[in-house]
Image 1 (tube, helix red, strand yellow):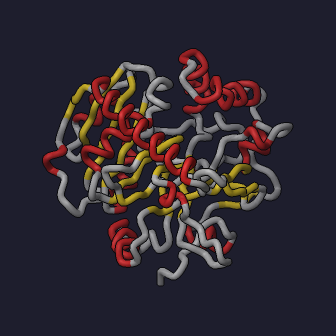
Image 2 (tube, one colour):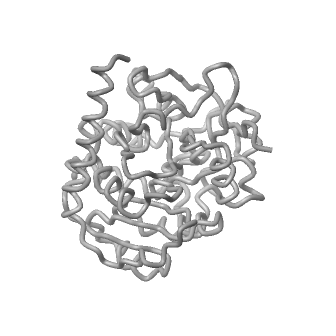
Length: 336
């Protein structure tokens, strides 16, 4: 990449920073407890809309992991999500009714909060249906991972999005508030993934799994991307570009070994395919706020009406992180 391209990327990063600063005006604090944040806290950042049923388990999962503070943007929920979060002593909440799409699908809001409150912290940027699994997560808190990353000067940690699903129709068993979603959605595709490198931003691009297999069978390359970099030691000049798929500076995206080894990585267990999905699809198709004309949600709508079973004879039942390492979906690298 030549000097001209480097200058272009620097300008792009500054533009995203400027957008984040400008979009902060769309956020109204509902419950600001950021004064409680301690210097060594790992922080979670989330944009959500009408996710009340998912929030109790999401918060419990990450509290048990060692997260001490959550920063939420509630984008016009009408199901009580914002009020519920405002009651939580470890949550700071901002509300907005502005366009999710016009805010770069919420990333302008996240980039602002990350800049203001995340600088100097390890930060997890997540959706409410994403659950991080990392090496030794069954015995070590998230601070053990971030301490190890600090020791080796590693600034970002990747996690492949692993779509989890039930056996049988998605709506066959209703999801209850506070329930572990993986009591229902406990299956995943152990293979069927396409991986390539993005030469401009140096990030991996991963597609496949049940969303390519079931919802985009004729055009798997149009299926949603599964590569994410959710855990970052945030600095003031960092920005997310497209969800948590890639960042600038682009060195943060090089989370894989280029000489044949393996760097540590995790998985984000994705609890999307549960009973709340049908109502969510209907709502989001009306709002028209998602990427590429809500292409993903149109694919869901066409297929869910047929009550598909995402399970197949090659599906694997989730056990633990070691199983994912054996299957090559994540790696502990040289962390022992």
